[in-house]
Image 1 (cartoon, rainbow, N blue to C red):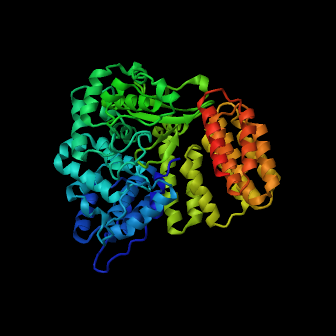
Image 2 (image 1 turned 90 degrees about the vertical axis):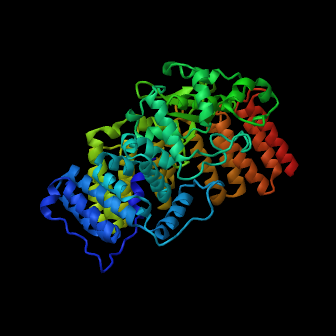
Image 3 (image 1 turned 45 degrees about the horizontal axis):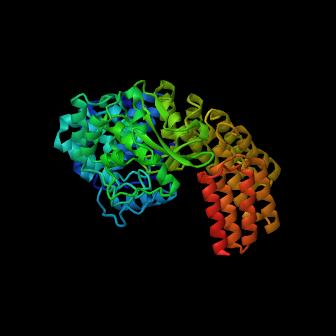
Length: 599
């Protein structure tokens, strides 16, 4: 789910120094986009007394344009206001909110720095006056920047990278601004220690990005030499971030380009170019055994699915193709495959994915946030409805709705959010803002549930989001004592996704099980587990094993009920219809052994 619109929700109120004299924008200028002359005046004033004193007047201008129903004009003024707010905020104000956002989105990892500067210095101090002027005057880039921005982007570093690239060559920056933005939001913090997958040591594969200037120059050179299957200018920043997140060094990417020289239509063949090592599977050795993890090493030695997927993604990136490494659970084991953006600007998400193993969905890491997301979410993005005029209008409304909500005007926020969903039902941030505004206004639970049900209908083609709003409706019903209705809503998730997205049903089963731990007696918990197993476990595979069987068995061990844990696993072994010698078979046996050792 997209969260970038919510950045305004954490912009604090920026006070105005008494000595500053922020310019009042004449009402006559609010019927047209900011003129170059007006932007020059605003920029000159900010160079004199900082950006913070001008935030309020620029916000007033944006609101004035919005109330005149000039959406394109309002959006342009709003972006100027957002730049001022962004550049005027201090590091001391930004860093604590960023730390909270990282914790809230659960994207913290060991490679993140543990200390950050928290000076009373404006974040925009790292941005040169020349770059500030260019950004203010470039409406298209401004819209792309704020659309892409996430609460967990480390803004001081993002801006510093952009400024470094601009200073090195302003003309090249302006030509490849989308590439610069993608590098900035990916390189702002170090990658996690288990990226791109966790089955190789840090010694064999250092998780380090090159210098931004080196990366910027390398990708541009490949583009100018005509070595890419996509032109950089045709890719959006949200697509380019899946190019610049290469884990292999550039020397290896150049080697890959020559060694795996497949046309874009046949890029999936890069996966099977790596010989599959059945001996590693048989010996239960999923981790890379070599001392180094270079692309030539992988091709020479062969590997298992995660190595094949990693190799293929790097081959794609060497050709300027956005690629993703996916991992998921199937019937009898876990698997990794890859996806790529083809020549028709369509994401192909099944390269190396085995249909007979029923890998219902795959999960990948967003290199901007390092958050896990599913291939179905990517497909949601790939539909490109955000390029439609209706969505652009919807986005303007939700931007203003979020700003009104931050300012405490929940009624106007609710009105703007309702306009946003009326323009585009798939604008998920608009639904979130509408619900948040309703809560601020004290709407009763039934009213909010009605909005959630509207969202369910809006996303009925998108199982992840449909299930999300059904779950929230069920939680609301349960909170006000409507347990039977809540259970019926939960069953909808299972029934709606029994074939295409059984993983969502598994997740619902897990939540039901966890809820029983805190609300039921031990015999009732056992009954709940057996019921879930009988209803949803038949042939469900390793996903159900991970999310339900292991969770229940470990819970029984903690309660000092090892005999019940063993019975639960043995019953699961019969119900899940386990193939002999499969990965699931081995993991079931290992779990039984661990329970007996714990006993």
